[in-house]
Amino acid sequence: MWAGLTPPKKATYFSCDELEALADFYIAYKFLRVQQNAYIDCVLGMGGLKKYIASVRRMSLRQFVTEFLTKDEKAHFLVQILVDKLEEEIEDDEFNFGGTAA
Image (cartoon, rainbow, N blue to C red; front, side):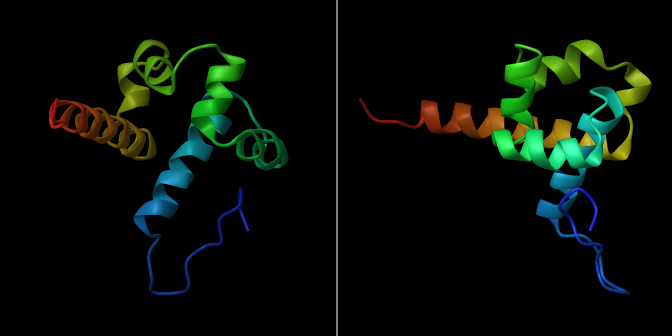
């Protein structure tokens, strides 16, 4: 088990949810210097990467990714998964907000 994830069985792949969880761990490990045990206790224990960054860095996850990561760092496969997820959430929020009846 690695940061709360079990490697997929032979000849299978990670699910989308598992890739997103792996992307969260990568961000925490690579850029916030959170070790695996601390990730499970602190980040997951706090409710996830968004809440952890909001508490520790006092900013949103989106701000952290867009303002503090270089272009090369943002190009990493796992970071791109997280960026895509954040963009989807923004689009969903805009759609839900714009679609409400008065």
